[in-house]
Every structure is written in structure tokens, then in C-alpha cells.
Image 1 (cartoon, rainbow, N blue to C red):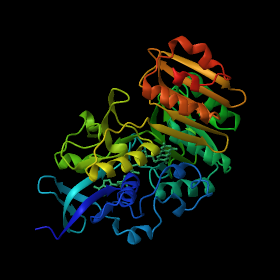
Image 2 (cartoon, rainbow, N blue to C red; image 1 turned 180 degrees about the horizontal axis):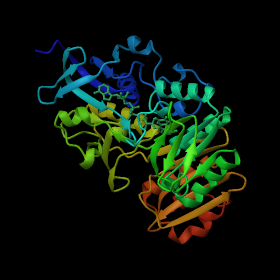
Image 3 (cartoon, protein in one colour; image 1 turned 180 degrees about the vertical axis):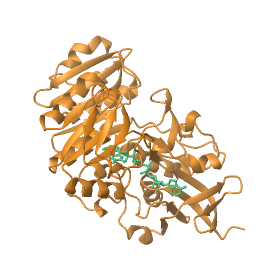
Length: 414
Ligand SMILES: Cc1cc2nc3c(=O)[nH]c(=O)nc-3n(C[C@H](O)[C@H](O)[C@H](O)COP(=O)(O)OP(=O)(O)OC[C@H]3O[C@@H](n4cnc5c(N)ncnc54)[C@H](O)[C@@H]3O)c2cc1C
């Protein structure tokens, strides 16, 4: 027998926090229990590599809902509580500490875990990963004491952390597998633009280098690459990607994408079991807009999906059709926004003035927009998003797209 009965069980943090708020906003009356493993109430992670890391923002600024919101809105927040297991047929969950609750509907928004580099020297002190507040605190503290950091990774986490640390006075060297940082998502030309921003602010960049070992006697003092390079630093931050945390869902018998690639959901974000939804980094859903299965690790997507799942939990299932949006900042040196994600593309169309730091890149696949990146021209992105969603063929209009004076709205009229 379960200890008690609730209507909605929400498991997670960020996306779950948005789901709870949306449920109440839409007038859901049933009992809501939100259980999250971390000690804090649901919070957003982007500041951990940006404002919070640089000491410009406090913890509470990152909270999804104010700490007293939960009580005021009748949402039982169980921070620091792991959901140990789910019985999806009996609709019961075992919480850390032994309590068993019976629920009607559930959201699994269990996020992702960082990839750990299990290499020689991995046990040395001074090797950091970044996912939670505590990690960001540790990196900030290390940066305050040390002169030089090594960032491992060529995607946005390593680049953002390098920019934040450098802006606060710590020398930084990036070691990346890619030939150009950020090129996996944005292509080499745009990657080069960002790399130039980093190097022009004094960040050292070593590309085409895979880390093969960490070196040091009393704590880490260098990373060694497969090309025989030794890149020295007083501490290391690794940004080597994440894996969706499917553990709870998998043990409960929900369908999981091959290779633990997320919880398999339909186009409404419902999992293989009716009444159980997923959202955020862990959610692999059938995207009508893209005509393929998608799992995206973006702040905006987790937020939108958390809110969308609330509607599903209330029995108003509709396809999730929002075009994924991503943003990133390199300190206050450059900000980027992106919609997509483009799986691949055969052409890039550049618009605007890259020297002035105001440009947009359209990534075209088969004449249609598969993604768009912008620096300083946010207004272009809204149009690009609509063109992507509509699947408009722009192959006859490439010159016009490249011309910064063309009204992009005219493409939507036709
Ligand atoms: C440093 C950093 C910077 C980022 N910057 C950007 C950015 O600039 N732009 C952008 O678009 N995205 C950014 N992201 C990505 C974005 O933060 C994530 O996509 C988003 O946090 C995903 O939200 P989520 O709710 O799916 O998962 P999470 O925020 O990871 O929340 C999941 C929570 O579920 C908990 N959990 C897991 N299993 C259980 C269980 N069994 N019981 C209880 N709790 C459990 C986890 O401990 C975790 O607290 C950044 C991420 C990081 C780490």
C-alpha cells in the first residue's frame, strides 16, 4: 500500500519546475509532488558558466520559481530527494527514505549527466566538470587561486567557461578535438569567427587535439594530447558532452532510444506509457517540424517542453511543434542565438557584417532552412524560425537572403 495518493508526480529540476508552474497556471487542482535529487529548488543552468561563475549573479536569481512559490501554490517540493523506482502499472513511486507514493500521472525530466573522461591521471585533484551549482562554485574558487586553466572541449561549455574565467583574470587554454571550436554545431566559418573572438581576448586555443592523459604530482598540472602536446594549467575544466539520465525510466520499463539516447516519446511528449510524459534533455520526441526524432539539450527546449507536458498531464495532448532555440555568450565579448538544429547542411548563406559582429548564417539543406545562427541580428532569427517551420524552399532567393537590406518577412508572405 502506498503511503499516500497524489495526482501529479514530477521528477527532475528545471523542466519540472516549469511544468509545476504551468499546471497551476492552467488551473490544475490535484496534488503535485516535485522530487529532485539536488538540494536546491529547480534552477536554470546557463548562469553556471556565465554570470554566476563570474560572481555577477546570485543563486536565487537562477531559480525557476521563488522558494516560497511552492508552498503558496500547493506544490510539495522535495529537494534533495531521489526517486528510486517507479512502477508504471501500479502507478507508484519509491522515494529516497522509503516513502511510497501512488500517482495518477507523471513527468520524467531527469536531465543529463556529464561524460567523464576516464583517462590516465583522471583521479588527480583539480579536474572539474560542470553541471550543478557546486561545480560552478569549485571552478570559480579554483580560478581565484590559480593563474591558468585548461579547458577540455570545443563546444559551448568549454568556450563559455574560458571566456568567463579569462574575463575575471585567469589565463585559459582550450584543448579541443575539433579543428575549429564550435564548428560541430555552426560550421567552420562561424566557428572560426568565435575562435577569433576567444584568441583576440587572449584565450589560447589548441585544436585538433584529443586529450589522452592528465598529468601532475600534487594535483593536475597539465593535459597531454594524442599529438604529443603538453598543455599546462593549474586546474582543468572538462566539457565533453552529456548523456541523458534514463536510469529511472529504463528501470521502470519505459521505451528508451538505442544507446541510452533518451526516453522515447511520441509527438506529444508522452512516453510509451499513457499518462507519463518526459521533457528536457532526457526527452527524445518525434518532431513533426523536422520530420525526424529529436533530442535537444537546450535551456529553452527544456522550459517549453516542461510547460507543454503540463498540458499533456491535464489531458490536452497536442504535438510539440516549437522550433528549438539556443543561446550562448562568450563573456560580454559576443552573444549568439541559434535555431535548428541542423542535422547537416549543404550550403551556408551569410548575411550582414561579420567584421562589425552583426551577422546571420542560414544553414540550407536541399534548399530549405535547416538552422540559423545569429550574432547581433536577433530579428533575423524569428523569420528563420518561421521559414524552417513552414519548410519554405528558399533556393531561388539566396541572393536576397544574403542581402542584409532584404525584408525577410517577404519570404513568409509568399
Ligand atoms: C553550465 C551549463 C550551461 C548551459 N548553458 C546553456 C545555454 O547557454 N543555453 C542553452 O540553451 N542551454 C544551456 N545549458 C543546457 C540547459 O541548462 C539544459 O538543457 C537544461 O538544464 C535541461 O533541463 P532539464 O530539466 O531537462 O534537466 P536538468 O536541468 O539537468 O534537471 C534534471 C534534474 O533531475 C534530477 N534527477 C535525475 N534523476 C532523478 C531521480 N531519479 N530522482 C530525482 N531527481 C532526479 C537531476 O539531478 C537534475 O537535478 C547549459 C547547461 C549547463 C550545465
